[in-house]
Length: 273
Length: 314
Image (cartoon, rainbow over all chains, first blue to last red; front, side):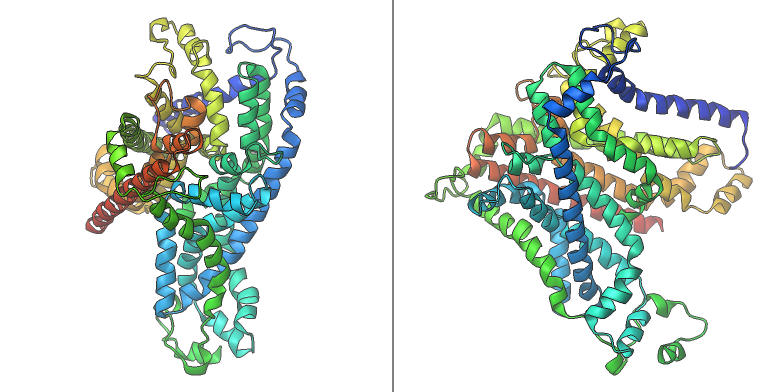
């Protein structure tokens, strides 16, 4: 298994070739984003006189700065709320053997299966009646609720594998349930909190459909909607569009390469339940 | 602490993972209202609107007019008559099945390739997974350009001397659906790989070495040892890709908008179009109910099947 043979070398070359094929679109993306619109040579040919004009143009015309700020706000607030309420809810669900506890858990499981398309249209109407359309906070409210089933499911699975002795010790020392949760249980949930944080943050940051519905036409947009609007406006000015695409994925790629170990482990491990 | 440690039999670890026996006043159960904030949010965003959605599916509501009437099963009858809806259901299932097969096939091959002695395995894992975290709408716009008539894919075929293979990948109604599948596989094969890889790494190397000593070749080792032990990874991967494929919206929206014509419309894009460009909310929600039923049937069926296989194997 661990010896490096000539065949391993051949495999290594094959795998690197596959990685190059996967990376090929990124080469074209960068190559065209730094190219002046007047240069119409093949997208494969390296750009001879690179320019950053497309980036400044896209940044200003696409109002990407505001969208970036909105995306950061929405993602941070939604994930914090979803993790807080879900971990708190998971505690009694995992520990209580009462009937209501099982019923609540079944409801949560049902939430895992329901496609959000079903709730989307009636909720759109409610949000409209409450005057929340066009506000970033409507999205925070939406994601906090939408992510409850999955996040609670992760926390309950993890909690059931944790010994109760630490909580019991806290109770003996005079802690109430809230203090026991805050100071004893929640710190022990750290590994699954990291997993839930990664999965929720990537989902909220990348989601397009919901902000398209709730924020379209308003000044407050998240990055995916701003990019879609930008593409609709500059239909065939691909150099400008590619600069906008690159700007919009730069933050997530930076975070990914910086935290790749925890992010990949989050995706690989979190779904085992 | 002294009380509980005295209770534990010295040789058993089982007590640590199963709930310890109730111990009178020591056992405090957290109060039910800890679940209240989460359940209120969940009810407001998911439960109540879903129930209302099912109700609207039996009405002729247009999304605005407060006066609407019950029409019984009319919306569902309309789904079976509407050629667009039938095409969308067919496309949705085709995409889901194609993605499930190709993405997991490629993902498994990548995982087997990375899980060897190759020196670049860590870099490969990070690079191959990277597309999975990038915003789908953005990668889809990128591919819309690459797959265009003058795009880089046709350019690459030209350089390779394969001019005759050049196509209008997204403009050809017979090809567009498969181009979408190709983009999804490009983006998420690394995701499947990572899950298979976690499964592969949990297989003790002693078992594989022992079968190698017994004379089993690599193919035999994979089929008889690795494959059955990967059953949990298969379950997760198949569930994720088939449900993701059924709900697909962003990539279709950005790549083709459901076109040319309706050639690549899925249930999700049709739901959006019917509700927000045609104002047929009642009908649109009936489509969402159909989508819900498809997801429920496919996921429970698949789960039952795979869970049984997992049991048979272990």
